[in-house]
Length: 217
Image (spheres, rainbow, N blue to C red):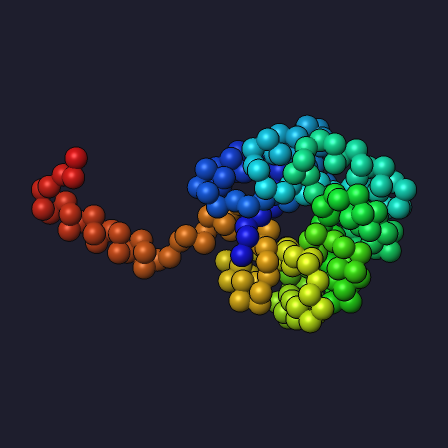
């Protein structure tokens, strides 16, 4: 499963990229607003940090506006992916960009039927929101599994991008359900390496090594 980081903070992107953990980046207007910086400037800088896809979301809600904004964003860098809302206008815009050979990420997906529409429009990625469904006591992972089965049934090439991930358990369950990609907050990615038994084992190894009085160097 590929890892995208869900942030617009360059420092976090650079740190995770240095670990070799990043396959791409997703952003949205809320994340850009938190950065306090110019939207296009941030997208350009992120695209310079990573070689993988960088999702940049349109702000318009109508088809003509989405197309105009998406065409503008696509010129920033070759690895820009146009992020579109899962509405009928968004689906139409997705088809427009697909026919132009521009990658798309259709976001705010909450049902298998919505995901089916995105795949038929040729979306590069579909982003089902796990955490927001969990907030409503709806099993977000069941949606991932449903989309995976539908896409496999008809050999759709759209990749399932598990979004709104909040915990390490979400990452594991998305991988088990067959998600192609997970977009994850920086803290959750780093937390995947943590385990109390790992820490305990390292502590014991360090004490045992110190007792030998030796040095490797």
